[in-house]
Amino acid sequence: MAERKQKSATRELVETLLIALVLAFLIRTFVVESFQVQGHSMLPTLHNGDRVLVNKLAFDFGQPKTGEIIVFQSPVIPSQDWIKRVIGVPGETVSIRHNVVYIDGKRYPEPFLKYRQSQNYGPAKVPPDHLFVLGDNRPISYDSRYFGMLSEKRVKGEAFLIWWPLNQIRWL
Image 1 (cartoon, one colour):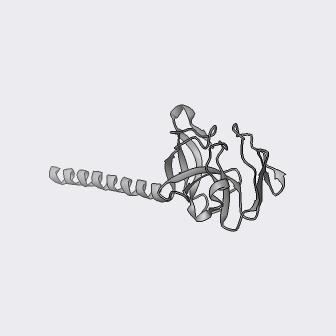
Image 2 (cartoon, helix red, strand yellow; image 1 turned 60 degrees about the vertical axis):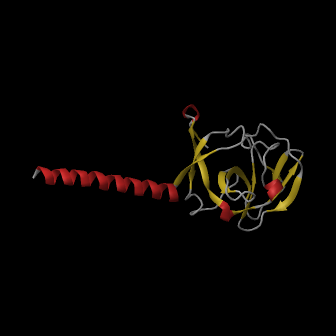
Image 3 (cartoon, helix red, strand yellow; image 1 turned 90 degrees about the horizontal axis):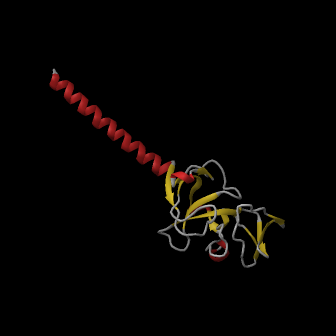
């Protein structure tokens, strides 16, 4: 009888661990994933080495919106994921004049910017199923000003929380 209880306890432990592993795999694959920021293109919002959580379901139920920070497969180096801010969505016309972003001719407020210096750009209309993305550190960001409009098919999700370093935890 004691042997039977031992087997059932061992079996229960193994089953619990398997279920936990399968759930973790499914959540990471389809729902939320951690992403480590590499580089300085999103300063001062995000720093090199920050870790953010990315909602992979965010755009299954809606479209990206101006101002959201997204993670996407690089159109230049497909083996890398990049992080930038959505500035223009399909149908909008984006331009940059004298370090100021305009969307459909109206100045886009960017209180999050510390480094504004940017070459003039556009005007350019964002085509269907594409986005115009910029880094917050404009002088050094390699973004839509250089690689063009980003296909929405490359978007992996919306960054919503900085979780590392622990003293910097905050919602984005």
